[in-house]
Image 1 (tube, rainbow, N blue to C red):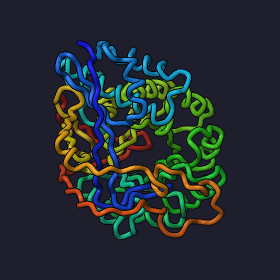
Image 2: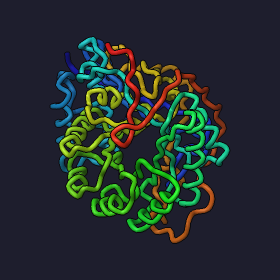
Image 3: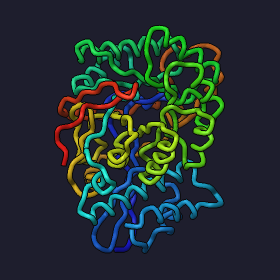
Length: 420
């Protein structure tokens, strides 16, 4: 089998509500989703979700090769960018190509990727994450009531601009999930998206912890600040989670050496091989791993083979336009299907018919605000939104009801009865 070519598409995810974080908000709820398709001479096509940046340069490292040699080809792509480096969007392209190769490898073997990677149980624990900083309190309650109706018992909200507002919103989400669980205390997490200094992080989290129990605080300071993350870790009761924006093992090593992380995260767009390597490094430090990202299907498959996987992020309950996934949510977990490969299918015609060009602009989560990390007083109101466009709201997919509850002082799901 040989790799013969690749194609790129861009679809959109229509949330039907504003989504974003402390850095900005997509007010229209329309977020671009890049796709890479890798073709072979045996008619098998692999799918990866991620950047297209420098795809021609990176594809040259794998063209004509056997796609089943995934890990060697991953290192070839890293070497292809040796002088310029592989950080940023370029690393996302490597991740998308890598995920597509794993998809091909599993399809060729006639197995779902979770089985090929050594998973025994197809279930992956989930927590709700609504990208919700742009919502009013009433809207926030409505969104998490929908998650609760699907049995979700842990949630991460976006914050970092005003600790009083963060505490109120965490309390509202706690009440929603607790009511749905008939009084069982839910798990709560807060994501600050790198908006604080070290002292601000300790002060703000300590203030929130006077009345609430946080499982983790995510990205309280800059992603590379090993000393700062370690200082926060020592200064608060909550665990410190980070890593979704790190690109390569070399960026994790200083953080782990400094004892800066309690929970090691990786982004879905950075690929399966990256996750496997980061997970091995975390396991050597006795730390749990937790994938981040919407439609993180490649990392969900890989997580089934990780004994120290903690929980994975569930953002929306329906996929981007033109994508279908062989998975559902039940008993507090993603439940992966039996389709060979990732179980991810692309409808190019639907994407072509519904795609709306969408680029990052000032005021979106992709652009760091000028005053981030240098705010003296809390921010009033929501982050600046992206200019709204008129788009139809996406339908909500109704899934079976899941549940989630604590383990390892953090989270785990009840075991799914089906083990095949």
